[in-house]
Image (cartoon, rainbow, N blue to C red; front, side, top):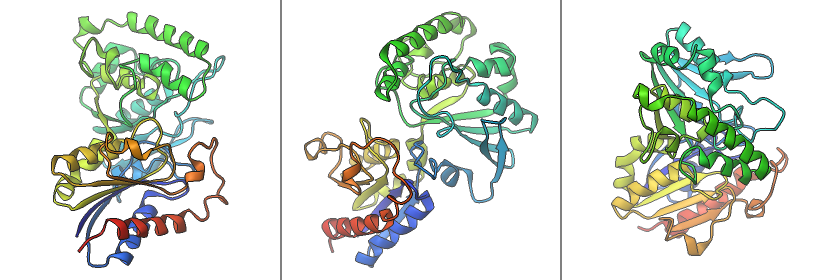
Length: 352
């Protein structure tokens, strides 16, 4: 039996650890299966280990570079003239009124990249993002819109996001903040500020690229990613893509040729993870069954067919509606529980 297996990080377990554990667990139950497996990232920071983007996208020969001022320390991953900037931890969350959550950090990183002769940049953004300046800090660090476009023109910038917003464009930012606990009135005030900023940017007169369909770039499904940072990066010529498309594309042939596609990921909320969506589309094109093994969430059996899933298995169902992160002590048995569940899935879905 041919198995296509895509694995993302779990709380307390880096993507490489999960990949090895899941592959070994499957083969311990079905040693004769042909398992094609790859680590992936959904641009979602897992507690204690991050998003896994550096393990998946930076390469084994990349150099870790510390960037940022006090209170904003973070790491970039450099391989020659290519650079990965992962903001899924440092810029994740909701803004706080009275405090500045600025996108200057991204502008400073890009300015540093220019000085270093970087020619290719991958930027990973979270949903929601805690910045409240709609990416204006990037433009301030780079001398304004026109200067920034000129300076970044020789640089290839690809922005990788968890997916689109529920509502088109910047209108989805406030909704995502509210869903994560921001007071609706505060979210509305921030959204009103966004409208004022967008009105002051002469997008159409400069011929800037649209990020999506319908209306201007502020209406793109990706514009609100990172709290609106994707909007400004799009104006500067960056390509915006769901990270799942990038991670799944190299294993497209393996999925198409498989008898079963298995995806392992963290918590599943309102939206399916980017990589699961991308992989399910490929599998559906060839009639390949799709099974997801996920940490916790609210998937219901009656929803699976509509979501393009044939099976769903929860590692820690007691965490489905939990708030706050689990402690390291609470995560101690996660590897054992994952191993056991993968074996159960292999027995259930395996055939000779």
